[in-house]
Amino acid sequence: MFYNQGYAGGTAMRRYAAVHAGSRIEGASPHALVKVLFDELLIAMDAAALAERQNDRLKVSDKHARAMSILFALESSLDFDKGGDIAIGLAQIYREARRLMLLAARDQDAAPVNQARIMVAEIADAWDQIG
Image 1 (cartoon, rainbow, N blue to C red):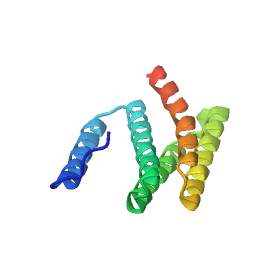
Image 2: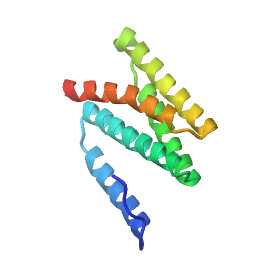
Image 3: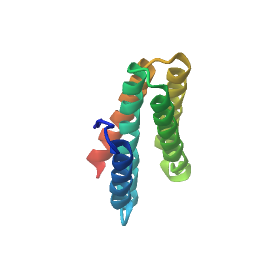
Image 4: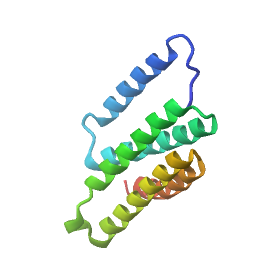
């Protein structure tokens, strides 16, 4: 889902994406909200890896920051009292994904982003099957 940044394309696409995300969030159940976070996280990771391969430092920085923010949001939404070992396991996965994202940023390498994406995609797929 990468678009040409031609005449006003970048601004228009960002506005469209914001409206699209906003419409998905309004009235969504907690389960659906987490699905939106997973979807947005995977998109950010894909964009970060692509930007890294294209050596687009500005976009890499933006997408890394977005992915990190979503990973923090996912972890902060965990209920360790009710979730027990599952919540602990998810927190560990989110922390490892953040570590890989930081490694990717430090080394300017898309490979750790791809590793993090694989881990997160498994959880996202399982989340889709639950709902």
